[in-house]
Image (cartoon, rainbow, N blue to C red):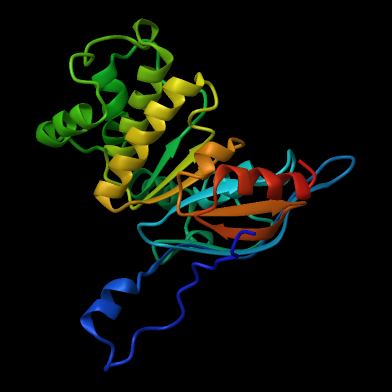
Length: 265
């Protein structure tokens, strides 16, 4: 049976806490408090129903659940791409609900990276220009040394001047990951990042993605339907009917599958 685990960090360490204990205490990177999201229509849809969730800095978390459980809505709200109907969202200690639309856009560009299943690369731009896009929009210059390192880490060296149409699916997704990482964001959110790839390519991309995020000490949240992807993370948050149904610490793919079945996948 999987062990339920919480990543909540409460309070600061006392004065007598040892150096090793200090190192173990990490700040909360993403906090959702009583978050609800209702979409209006002839029949209103409650995508999230009072979600409370805290994820500590430098953690790697998978978000899973049956279809319609609220996974993508949670990710979009954590990224500031959508706003909750009620409740509060904080990323890196910054309350998103207090920001103006312009301030939120700037914050997102500088502190949050987002990877989409469909890559979302601009077809008329080459690899280097696609990667640099968040910096261009923020009015910042490209750090040549960092970009070269990122290209090397993701196995993209030599593809800088290719257009998206000249790339394989795996290469295109690695470019999308590089674009999400180029600003060195504290939090990276990924929606089915390997969903459009075959299993072998998907595993290669996932390994690279996790390796780079961990090396940079970034908080990574991955929405996925694949138990093997979830098993590569530190914790799995399971949603059902717009609520957090369970949290599993470092489960196997089989344990994730069993829990999903129990939730009515």
